[in-house]
Image (cartoon, rainbow, N blue to C red; front, side, top):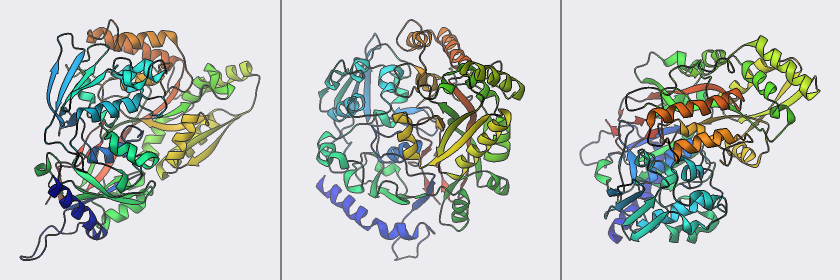
Length: 549
């Protein structure tokens, strides 16, 4: 094991030389050192954290997914298949899942991956003093014994329904049987953490290459938060190292999509995201691809904030003032679809192939583009609020495309609703997320993506005690969601979906959010890059099977 670790350190130490030039040619001249096979990829932001339990951003999850494995991973079809789980046993009542950890799974410092690593990582996630944003996944999405009581402070993290029966046997006790439990375990929130290493790093954990630990396909060779670029190299201690055919990944953080396209055309990037007018320039290129990202963009409203947003008629006016088709046709131009529901289409597909959201106009009575109706609701709101003029602030990321979308929203809303002023506040994504978490916002242009294909990925956000909820409380809604996750409808798929649709209508009738569009990713991928996988759930890009020709 020490010999393997030494090899890894030598590789990581020499990695920067070949990352500096990037991948140009894979052919070599006899007798010369082969050119390292590096994938040069674009990220639209650096992510908010490389800590699997703390991360709350799709870009962070992608990078973490390169460095770490959970019990399961995604295959080429987006299905969950075993990773660190060598074996699984499920009790007859479906409540207890027992996993055997692979004997050849190691951390990049040489430590074996153990059942205790999962216990520690999961207890860390639900610890209310830690401040994780995805605790709801343990309390309502995949309810684990005692998780809700721990998050609320009634029980200590050690009471979580997880055990290390021995070094390689990890036991999980659920509140109710879940047929999709294994599917969600590919998501980084459920990854393990090496307690000794994490605690030795203290507050600096996951803030540099030296304070990151891998058990997956790649290891971070250089990294700083908010860096413009960083690199990963192949992890020779990875249990499935023979599968990995590339030497590493070099990420460049580029918010300017035009600059990214130029870098791609110059050969400095192997894959880029495209936006707006760029797509029309390259859509006939054989290297162009467009597909669902799984993300839904929407305006999040702080119902604990200004009195305008606490008024239902005002919220209905806001959602009917927006021409979503204009946004997707004239701004994003990437194949995205206008969205008028709380759950996007094409994601929540049942065993029979039925889409939970087959009809994008199912809530058109309360969510559509209708200026006359918007003004009528606005007049009611003004009378109820005793105001003729109002001002609200919309925050958005500093990425070019989001600033463009926000500017269009500002124009549309102000034109449709005379007397309402929308001020824009542009922030780095990390700052915007901090402001939302602290409640220091009024309107927020944001997105949400699924950990797996189920409507509760979205609907759980509106449960009263969910950390993602921004001020809407409905006992009826909470009761319905409870019945579909821990109650009587868990094992009745048809009745469960009907109940979830009933709950979704409550969200839409109260205009809890303003849905905008279902995001498609428009990308270019160099023809010599084969098998880069794109998924609409959990991890959007997976690099493990890439071959460079």
